[in-house]
Length: 251
Image (tube, rainbow, N blue to C red; front, side, top):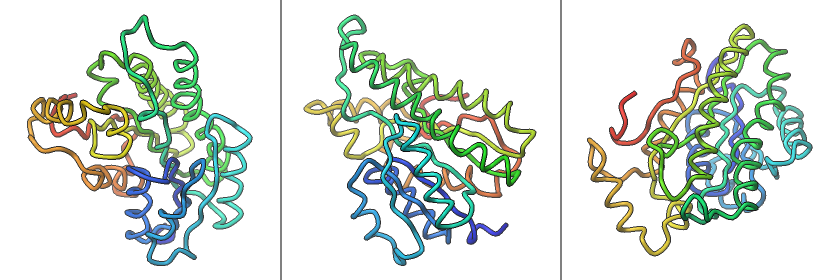
């Protein structure tokens, strides 16, 4: 199937990386379903032909909400060829010592970043199995590979996403469903600004100095990898975690 006749769901698409992914897929001719809890108006306004795309509300921590999102996408476009599991908790989290992390915040982080990713996968898998094709791209983080201190809940949740990616790739390969993962470093987005707060400039400077390519990443620096993993050019790639980190970690 040609890329310009395919449909992709992008979660967490109201702003930041998710918004950039949605716009990039549209530029490549994909039909795009952008999903988030709310605030999708700006994303839809950024599409050249918004009637070719669809905005749907979703709370990824709620399986019923996720199932309704998938059903809405299929009802509109007839099929879903790729899922970008971008939604997650990041900027809203509070960093701190491991023993001081609030238990309720830990639970919420796992409910969204881990269970939410699983919810989206388990809602789309039956559909992709029925069409014997599909690409799932999960979003982890450099934090999960390096072991980011003072953010144990976030780091742990993203490490779980990498493990989930590998297990699903093994399980779903016989159905010609590919599952891969990207692990970006800190990217210049609203979420990163919220996460680092008053020490944003200091932290971003430290991030860049740790990279082989010493340039801060912008959203457009990440979208190419996502487009590649969702499309036919990577049709024999599955179970992989691709670092998009300016050369910080070599796997």
